[in-house]
Image (tube, rainbow, N blue to C red; front, side, top):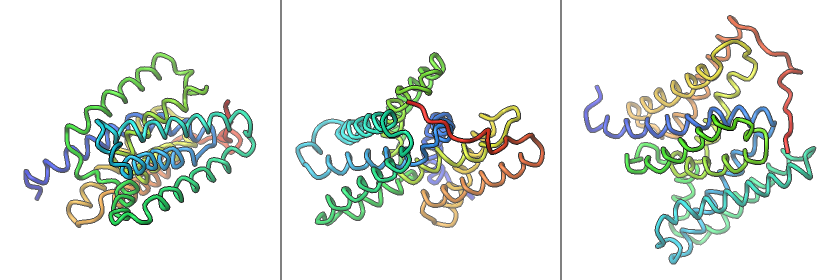
Length: 266
């Protein structure tokens, strides 16, 4: 049975997951539509690189909110670079984004090579520490995510233009801080992939259901079996996506391959 102390840990973690899902479901659909799957890994890795740079320079690390604005600057610069690539190298965009991700990951490893706490910091940025999220850490993401969702609601065409990259960078920066790179990628792609061929009603509802089931089951497994929370949630997200995709394929109309081919946008 869960005791009150355990619930006090799980509830903020679940709230963090719901916050991340609130924006990533919408943005993940756009990522699949554009066919730029690596963009979330690339921007998340660049944001993590910004956090590492702040950690390496004690003057920066001691500045107020350096753990937020430094990753944000790196993520915005990375998003701007990818937006530039989208206009000039559309046919090779996915390959270029993949290379960008690898170079950012290598840069992070090189920067931390001689840091005695480097391995732990890198693990924290990749896998996250969602179980140790506090309520106070959720305030800024809640405000920013609400503004992003409001902007998308008022001007949905933003997702089809270069504004998508700006929104994406802002969201990913805060998400990496909350849940880590691996969960950011999984939350963006797995629910969107589960519904990629579904053409019935309630696509958003089912996408959020995939995400919510994944986070709830992952947190419960992590707490009861003493498993790494990030890895457990990624695994349960994958299982939830597969189950929902299979069930919907049996009861609802599905898109053809030609209907789901990615479309690149400037």
